[in-house]
Image (cartoon, rainbow, N blue to C red; front, top):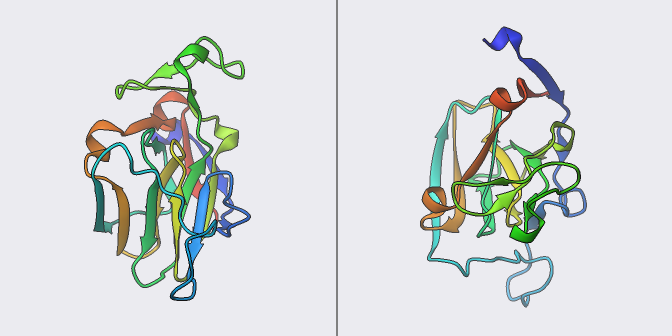
Length: 186
């Protein structure tokens, strides 16, 4: 029952290259002809066939109780048209199979995908607000919930691997594991 759950309200942080650097990159427009550099998306698409597509998402209200990561690939997301959207985020918590016994006082879990991770702590979950003509590059293993938005529907471009959602999709369910739902306090 949702009435038995704890609702944690999170204030969104505006996504900037500085505020988002622990989780990935914020990529903004650069002049045509500028050479590749550190402000360009630093991608890892080496474990499969890249897939760049447009996602049509509907009914994504400003709350979440699950968070997902991809251990084998970076991911890029951006709204078509530069509309405002939100993303729940927690730092990557992948652990080497030799470190499985105990990482920061928590027991590592083996994903159905085969890798090991420490479930994200409630206190480590943040929400970012992404606005304007920019996109987000998520580091390998970065936990994310969304895109979330106020409109009924939005289109997003997405760059990941062709089979990311089949073979590299690990989800933590805060509602089940912790009795928590996060709500964006906007």
